[in-house]
Length: 633
Image (cartoon, rainbow, N blue to C red):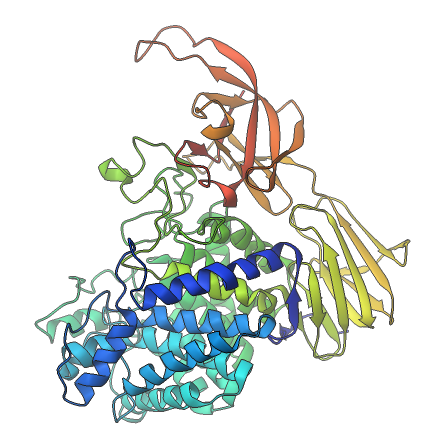
């Protein structure tokens, strides 16, 4: 068996049920229709989108017609349509829907009509000023938008075989290739995204220009750290005033192979790192390997929240310094955790090591899922670890930390991004090589691996520690042993076995009809922070399996700030019927509030039972206090 590398399973290989099946159906029933209406400005009391109208107006501009209300929205507004197409395409795999497919085709027709004769595609510049194309790579997001549309292309073509959008984006890729490679125009994306998209285009079509262009953008980045400054000096206009001098913000301070720390805008960073890891897989360019390892360790060992959130500050939506992980002002953009999943998944393709899947799981089940209301109708952009109504969302330092999820945003990158990841969960959960199927993330459903292995997975994960894998067709399988599971047992047809374990994966050979039962250790645990993290040093939080838990005022007499947890007591498992989740109960002590602001006497304390719910489910019962990290008794 080959244990050191794998590639992802085809997006059509996984038919979800259980927890992921429920979320997939939610996205299909609620999120995709809701977001479709938003793109078309059909939802009342929702932030105006104008996305589809921008494409319509761009087509008019190309034909020399009156563009009416012109362009509206963010410079990257086109990407919302692309991510919706991608999520909708993935939905068709397990939920065939001719009406939805017709809606996708209708939108593709409008997008195709907005493409210029030379292959250029971007509504902001086509509608507003076609002469400014590629003159503001720092802020213009043309390459970012093309990247997302390329990813949508790859998904829709693989699912339906329809070429219209594929042909549009191949022409667009050729146009970009001609500008930056053939003609040698200087520059690279201000916001990385197209790099990883081009790798997908290469994998979908075999077009080597796509891979060459991806390599070009990665290789030239940071070779001239002052490129964006000089670009700014050449023009007399700006989108939002960025002067290009913050090299860390756009990861351009050094060539990528020399970068040592994860810096700047967190989403841009992990999108870039995912592309670097993807190129490492495709080209075998080992000069990228050390950089990927350094940047991975920088994030996961020094700059990541326990929830898998990244990006500590609202200023630049960015990483800051090692161990600077404030809870109440955390940024933790939903897209950043999704990008961390992309980076992890690409590294898993390079080397099958459970440390990547462990982080991917942490990011998905905590920060990513917390980005969406349980009904699929409202969304968080920012994912704090502490929310205090009256302060959060109100004071100058906390205005970004909203206490309820809005229905939509002017900058609406996160909702469709989360939808496409949920609908393509199988690509992250499972991998394969020529003779082995890999289970990176546990989820109920049916999986057909290209190597021949065909399994059914029965589990109530992430709430259950028992995973039953039935082999419809046998073969080699590798199952991850999560870092949080201190014990595990593996039984084959009811008999416990030992299994060779390499880099956190247990390798077993299955025959047709075999049943493999993996039992993990989902004992609830207290988690303690490193004393290097000043904001939570000496504090404690709860987890069970892959889930981090938080305390809400709703379950704790309206107040969680006054609680301190007794870590010498046990943790009880209960249920929260309101949310359809479990809850954890622990002995705690509540400080009794006094009239004086300060006192020479310690506050009186009352012994209570405190209750915690999964972090992803917080803020589904109205506005109330929330904390992940708690004082300990």
